Image (cartoon, rainbow, N blue to C red; front, side):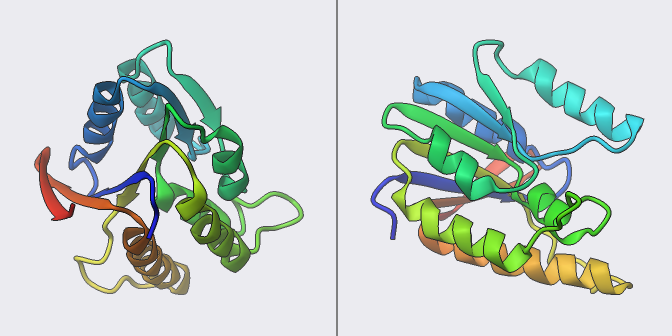
Length: 178
């Protein structure tokens, strides 16, 4: 169990989980570093990213990290600082999708292990946003099933390491662990 202030924020698409995490980061009164895991592949997704960017205070630092998340967290975490990671499921997708990986590839199991190893050691406040994707049917297609399975395993492992876990539905938080 981490000795620090770590909070996993889960929810479905458009549930309000990112806005809730941003609210918590603002309320912390700490310097905020926003760890953006998304890579933009099309204009519609680019518009979504722009909406997130416009909502964030301009004094927040943004670090874009599609891979090697554990290294970035270790470099950015500090006492008196709040890291907001948005989001774990985009990071996962980019690690397991061959088209999204860098030319030398990504070892998902090593990436996952590195995150789980470093998370309990990170000082400061850490807010991790992730999608809950396991409430629907089992998807068709091998990569889709792999994503759903790995997201569920990742959320469980991160939740075990966090002192707080919230589920967001219709913009409303439900404390799962506090």
